[in-house]
Image (cartoon, rainbow, N blue to C red; front, top):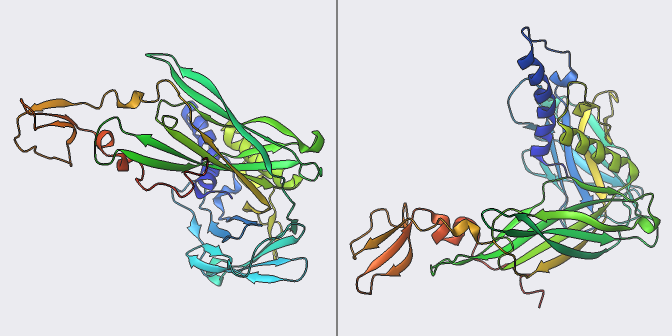
Length: 379
């Protein structure tokens, strides 16, 4: 699913390129562009999983205006398949429409279309997606990692590269897309109340692979995620949940062109977002441009854990200690601007070691102290 930030970045690409021209010429030139028009943005995916599917509808803003996309309120949105089934979506917030988990679940082999009727205030136009088959997806064969040293100064810091293997013995799946969610446990190196926490984060990159020229669509050693920053992701226990999506050739090339445009951030003559072909069109005016893609995908998922020793993962705590306080006098700003890391106030002489960073004394400033339900699944 295309994220809101991703779509906003599409427009920044063109603005970035043109700003280069402005800064290098005495007389700025404003090129003609179709990006001044408002375009409908469709963000959405349906899967074969027993879950709510979400479609988000926005209108873009002209290229030269600094503003967020405008969500489309009050649209009629529904999905049909090749067997005549119709499922209406409900608007749960402005511009966000969802399927009913009790009545809709995608099935492989079925062909689906998205239908949208906008309100008169939003143009009163109808939009449809081209019929798209939900292709099956094979299971992920293996998720594994290799240790790597990414930083050597002032001391070695180890991270790892996570890889993925998959294949399809039926030779149906030729194009893949992946997303992942990572969770890690970390411990503060001080005996404080909130010492143990967990953090979760989702992938934001477009991760795709064309395996159409490979036998059985076989993918081996695909570099999925690199963990290299000197943080404590790998200090205790790390988990990654990978979702693998099926897609057809047309969708793959949409994501590939979009990814290339985003990665290049190129020159004035690069492809602009509005001319990347997609699968949503205006019924009344097929020449009217739209943005985004309606994805139809089966999903397979696999979780892997990493429990290993990685050098230098505690480097972020080396500067935690701010001062040593002698005596038992009350501390001004305690637990608001200063925190106690080590409390020896019951000893002689009484001392307290403090920090001015909450992150050093309270792990909930970065994560949660509630253990994830799946955390012991590796046992």
